[in-house]
Amino acid sequence: MSRNHFNSPPSPPPSPPPPPPPSTARDSSWRFPLHSAAATMISEDSVLMKEYIKMMTDIIVLCATLALSLFFWFTSLTISYYSGTLQPVSPWRWLFSILVPLVVTVRALKRRSLDPSGALGALLVGFVLTMANYSFFSSLLMFFISSSKLTRWGGAQKKKIDAEYKEGGSRNWIQVFCNGGVPTELALLYMIEVGPGEMAIDFGNQYSASWMCLSLVGALACSTGDTWASEVGPVLSQSLPRLITTWKEVPAGTNGGVTPVGLVASFLGGLAVGVAYFVTQLLTVSNLHLSDPQWPIMVYGGVAGLLGSMLDSFLGAHLQYSGFDSSIGKVVSYESVTTKRICGKPILDNNAVNLFSSVIVALVLPGLAWGLWVQ
Image 1 (cartoon, rainbow, N blue to C red):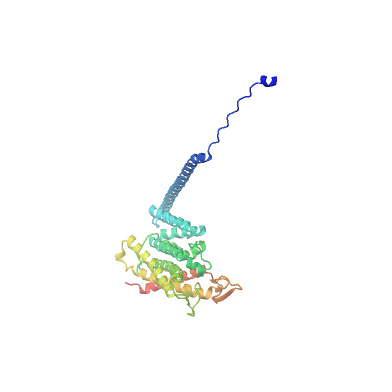
Image 2: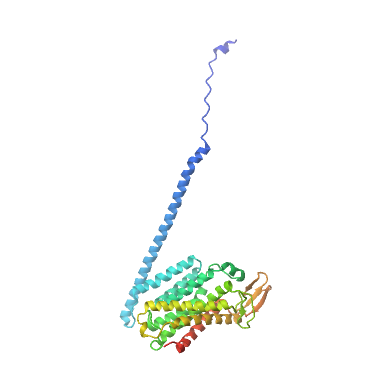
């Protein structure tokens, strides 16, 4: 053997093998609960924060409403003191007139019954009618809530026949003022005549104010009756509508088409407005026993609903264009190469027809009621 071999230093011992890497599965099993718990805590914190923000928003809105109502009350008190002829409006009436329409409008906006412009218009209409007379407010509320509910009802079937159907209705400011503009103007005239407050309908002692009350009920009942007819008829009617001018069958959705179901629904819609007005009278007017019976307001509400629906159909048959578009298989309100005319001329749209109908009914109903009111 060689010398070098015996004299060489011993080789170092082999290094120990590296420890095995930690188990990925184990790490995951330990990390997952931690991540899940953290995510749960973050989710709970987010929910709590949203609830807190919502609560604070409600408190701020309520405080602002209280401050605004007190400001208006103080203003009306000051004006009445210096004028000597006007009666101040109570702060509770100011509060109710601001807060309740605000709550209803915000809820309608969330449910897409109104778009932002429609919400602003509805807030103005609701404030004026509530300030003028609580019976006006209840009638308006009956119209709005019932119409919104019926618009959502049977949506799948309405989409098949209505080319302009929108989920929830989503009414804009034009639709709001075409249906609520006449009642708003009448409510303002009522406040100028007798001031804010409730009173019995009595043509003998309060002719002008009674005339305005009947006129306002007629306008709202007209809008309600027409809406109920157009929303209930397509869903429940088992037969095709007939054109009100010629009595010929027309496709569903034709302007001017009427059905027995729709006519009954229009009467019931107007009746509902009259009932809302009458019940509010019973709750808010203390001297009803000294005036004429108030129950006829319910009957005249139904008459106004039926009359308004028929008048709307008559105007629509003449002044609104209706044609059947073969490309989509629906009745439309525009002319095109694929559209075959059914009836009417493109003069007015649906909003204008609603406005004219409510104006006519508002003018006719007080005269009818004055001549036939039960003494």
